[in-house]
Amino acid sequence: MASITSITTPTPSLILQGRKTLFRPLQQVQVSATGGKRRSIAFVVKATRESSESSPSIVEFVQNAWSKSEDRIAIVGLGFAGIVGLWASANVVSAVDKIPILPSTLEFIGILFTWWFTYRYLLFKPDREELSQIVKKSISEVLGQ
Image (cartoon, rainbow, N blue to C red; front, side, top):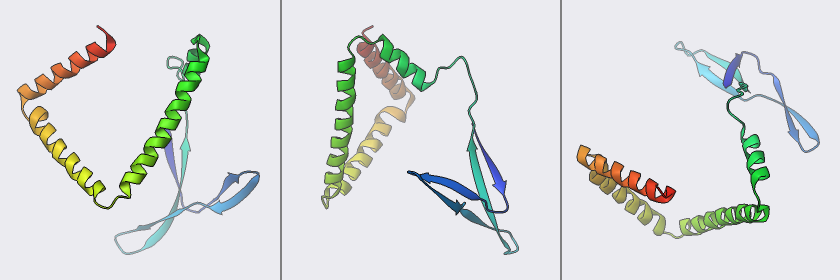
């Protein structure tokens, strides 16, 4: 849960960079009243965690999954392959984005496909039911039911 506290006078924040600490004031936001009068306000955002015993944290989930796995080398390999795939796809998108006319053409094709999909599956009730059946069938095929 996050909470926001408003402070009328700016206070220095502590920023850690490596082994050095830097003190600098918080970013100020200018607020104008209806009379044209301006006032500076600094915000401090504080994140708090609500303790809940019923929901395990992500770290506990990963630790449990790691301890139950038998082939840890395959899991590390899949993780590494995922990171490499993410890096490669980011580079491909960056390279395609540099080609002069291709990004705008792909954007136009995406807009046309979105319009077609909305008209075909989302606009009318029988079509929405058909899409729901297609999705349920696909999910049952993937899960092997």
